[in-house]
Amino acid sequence: MGTKILLVEDDPDLGLVLKQYLESSDFEVKWYTHPHVLLDDTEALQNNQLAILDVMLPEMDGFTLAKTIRQQHEIPFLFLTAKGQSIDRILGLKLGADDYITKPCEPEELLLRIHNILKRQLGATPNKTVNLGAYSFNPALYQLGFNDAVIQLTEKEAELLLLFLNHNHQIVNRKDILEKLWGKDDYFLGRSLDVFMTRLRKYFQHDPRISFDSIRGIGFKIEFPE
Image 1 (tube, rainbow, N blue to C red):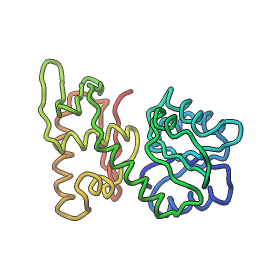
Image 2: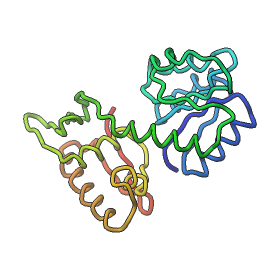
Image 3: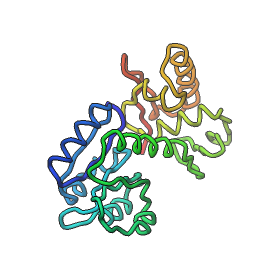
């Protein structure tokens, strides 16, 4: 499966349609009809790349749910709003809303909005140093630090490492990597990806807790220490 998505929609018919459509488009979807059930699922909050939230939910509106999630987890949001519904878009933007879509929505339009959000997320390079075990990684400067040494990464190496960092402890599909970083999946780009993987393994060889394991026929399983 591909990117993991959280869907919070209390309408059973719409929720089922969206879940099935997104899964047919190679997304992995966890669907909740009640916000409190999601908040109790800590593992799901930590291991998903996007949340689609209905604004009008039982007991807790989508904005309050987003605010609660954001207190512990950084994740982009897309809000579902009813046609003609008056909402506070400024509040949504302050909470970090990445997009809105009106219900009933065309699944194709929702899919396009999701891809645009994920593309922006991949391109949004954090301007801070991230600790990766015995290493430090500055995505904005393309620099990997180990002890007193600094390894200057290429732009593509840094993008690949950032993608893996955002999918820690997960299996990442080769096809998804090639399409996100190179724009398409073909044989020659696949060989280039293998070269980059060899480089990353060499860079991180001094910390055995870090691994980039190949999963035959699928992709790679990434492990960085917490």
